[in-house]
Amino acid sequence: MVVAVAARMWSRALLLVLVTALHAVGESAHQDNNSNFDTQLKVGRSIDLFTRYGYLSLSMKVVPRNDSVPTWIFREPTVDIFNNVDHLVRSRQAPKNVVFEGDFHMEFCDNLNQLLQAYFRDFSFEKLKRPWRAFTGSWLPEAIARNLGINSSFTHGDYCYVLVRLSRFRDRSELGRLPENVSLVEMVQKEMDGIKVGDYASVLMFIKKFGSHYIKSYVTGNSLYQVFVYKRSVYQNIKSKLQKEGVSDVDTRELLLSYFSPWYAEHMGKIKVSSGNKTVENWAQSKLRVRYYIFSYPCLLKIHGDPHLLGVLNNLLGNEALLQIKMNAISPAFKDPVKKQWFNEVLENMLDLWEVNL
Ligand SMILES: *[C@@H]1O[C@H](CO)[C@@H](O)[C@H](O)[C@H]1NC(C)=O
Ligand SMILES: *[C@@H]1O[C@H](CO)[C@@H](O)[C@H](O)[C@H]1NC(C)=O
Ligand SMILES: *[C@@H]1O[C@H](CO)[C@@H](O)[C@H](O)[C@H]1NC(C)=O
Ligand SMILES: *[C@@H]1O[C@H](CO)[C@@H](O)[C@H](O)[C@H]1NC(C)=O
Ligand SMILES: *[C@@H]1O[C@H](CO)[C@@H](O)[C@H](O)[C@H]1NC(C)=O
Image (cartoon, rainbow, N blue to C red; front, side, top):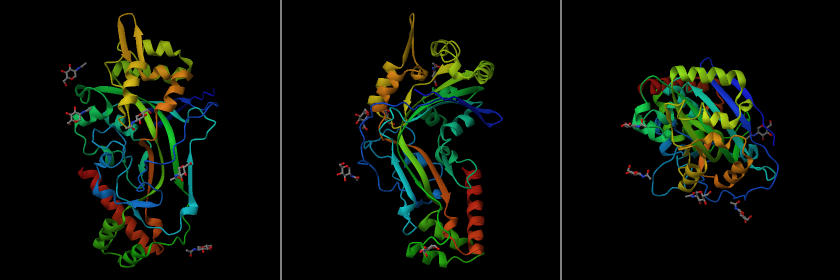
């Protein structure tokens, strides 16, 4: 088993420690072929970010949801805007000779805002400065607590957090670079021709009909995550210790009984499953439990360095949630440079307004 360790600063205050890159050769799991896939999720199709800004977790399966039909991954309406781009699409399912394709990482968050940012690290909208707000803008503290698996009393106050997440990738798709002369669907071209530079409303109408961003790439699969809550002084200590030593050099048992235990953490969040799958959640609650004398608590880091548990999880984590998405502004659809610039100006202006207002 190859275990790679990388540490990288996202910003001054934010540290991401990649615990393991999980690539092991061996027996493969079953391969399912997109059977429960919504056709809406396809690279090159566009969405209007403004219709559900702040509420995207209603239409994209990014956190567990409690609804009657649990099998959807993506139900945001999308529109086809480009012609003949299928040859630019690179899709692939997890390779057969890999036991577990995904990643396991830990991110240090100095405050609640950084925790939300960390959770949505792999979700981006071009030109949007705080893309996580497109998902979390509408979340009240109770929703934040429920979605992240922590007690609501820890969503305010001077707390720091560590997010630990294990992701199992299933399907990926990416749209290659669009050619300069990319052809547009006729209706889209017609609406675009009607846009007048200086006419704000004509751009708004275009976005309403054909969207603001198109799907550049995505990854689906499923993940387990857990949030640990600390007092600031304890957190600073752990952060600088692990930054210095690297997680992989510390014995797992030691981590489980120290930094990631109730003796250091102010609060240990529940182990959550991003798709909300109850079978997986129950498995995690019972199998990822640390026992020490009379104490017992669930800890996701138990998987760290345990190929057996990884092997089991490889089968348990199916294709049920959206793990990453990259959305690009649809500006490349504009061939007239002046019109393109006007479109960009209006789009940036609207994005700024939305970010301030929600
Ligand atoms: C799924 O797999 C089956 C059998 O391998 C194949 O017949 C079917 O066409 C596939 N469906 C899709 C949508 O690829
Ligand atoms: C589902 O939601 C309802 C209403 O919000 C709540 O009462 C119930 O406990 C939830 N069930 C689960 C399994 O979370
Ligand atoms: C969880 O929150 C409730 C109220 O929000 C509080 O009464 C309870 O003590 C908290 N539990 C823990 C373990 O802190
Ligand atoms: C775009 O340009 C390429 C190369 O110049 C050409 O082969 C292709 O047919 C063009 N496509 C369209 C839609 O005009
Ligand atoms: C939940 O996960 C289990 C184990 O991977 C799987 O058998 C089951 O079909 C999943 N349930 C749903 C609703 O996706």
